[in-house]
Image (cartoon, rainbow, N blue to C red; front, side, top):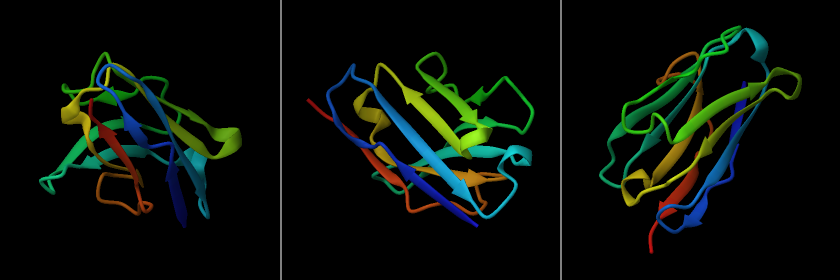
Length: 114
């Protein structure tokens, strides 16, 4: 089981980034994928969940309307499109299998700063 996050970087407030999560070693199409983040204060925040076979992701209140989660089962890849980024979105972003506490990758750092 492996998940690899990418797409993070440094962006100015109001900017956008698209994160990717490439999965292998399990039946991706039948698996719930979760995006979450670890803040500089080391707190873990749930961001979004997209269940297998579901077209409607769920979002944390803090990101709803700004972030969009999607998945491409043919590519074993999940995405997190982030728009109108704010400094409080600065965190290490992870994608996880099954739940926020499931297997995840090494993360990708997102830094929002002027």
